[in-house]
Amino acid sequence: MLLRKFPMRPTFNWLADGRRRKCLGSASSGFTLIELLVSITILAILMTIVAGVIGETQKAWKYASGRATQFREARFAFDLITRSLSQSTLNAYWDYDQGGVTATNQIPTRYIRQSELQFVCGRAATLVKGAGSGTGDASRLPYHAVFFQAPLGVAELPEHTQFSNMLCARGYFVQFGNDAAIRPPFVTKDKFRYRLMEYSPSAERNMIYYNRRSGASTLDWFSDAGTELNKSAEGGAVSTGNSTTRGLTRPVAENILALIVAPKVSRAPSATVNNPYWIASDYTYNSAVAAPSTATSLSPQGTQHLLPPLVDVIMVALDESSASQLDYNHDSAPIDLAGTAPFTTASESAIAADLKSLEVRLVNEKVNFRIFRTTVELRGSRWSL
Image 1 (cartoon, helix red, strand yellow):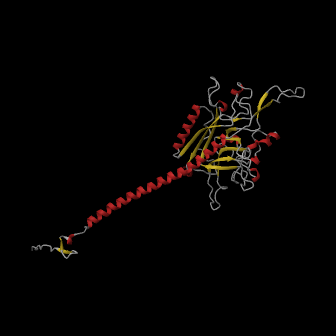
Image 2 (image 1 turned 45 degrees about the vertical axis):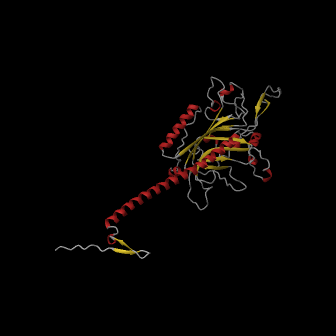
Image 3 (image 1 turned 180 degrees about the vertical axis):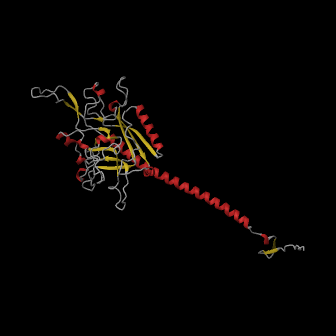
């Protein structure tokens, strides 16, 4: 049986002026089910792509923000070191040599340089004595430390604040430990990190003159450096850090793996001594002693009571996300990413090779790091041999 096709009756819409407008095919307008399903599928795919892009963007922003924040703290610490180091002084003077004076011969034979102040740098594990039992090893005190005197005028008593040039002791080194003394009281979990530490006693606590008068060791004036900020599992001494007895050592920045300090001169003194780092060929410099041996051939005192004219400062920093991935644990030695074996011989080629080796090591560990390096000119240096 055949069905008769009837023509579709047109529909009309009335316009505002009373005329009619024919609308053909209005009965067949709309989407089919297949078209709706295809549209929804495409929309879902687009939303999935957009969500993925937003998620990756948020991760990248969070990563970049955290890295910028961490390295901003590291750059502040690096600027603090270089600014303080540039102000170091020995206040040297010339006086009679009393070394050869005896009861029968009281006539001095020569003038020599003299100074009661001191500039010293070298291995942190050797110089930092106040770290307490169990914390003086090279993995907890990696690489180098530097200690010096500078006219910073940091006073503890209000009546002394007017003396803006009073001498203060300063020191910088990297130390591993927890954060129990510096974290908020509602945070109970220990966070173990490598931190750049600043030894910063006030001018009233400067022991350099007292130790020289009492005949103590030339290194005793910073013997409190490295004192534990809190009682830890290693049993280190306690630094209360309150308003009247603040800690002598404070953290400046977290996640600082290494500090390298290399004294040098602007040019070699002769063709045979052509290494600008010859004044501290093993990174060790002590202005209180007549050294190094290469200098004594040029002057009987060598570098004694002299500031190095230039100091290379290198600092290696991690970001927080990388540090949190490491297996830091106070029950065992921390992961020593910085290493302790390199940077034992100071020369242009040796430093470049050690830095390259350190970079490769950090890249292999898949951590985000930055190396800061500069040469600091010591304004108080009066270099003459």
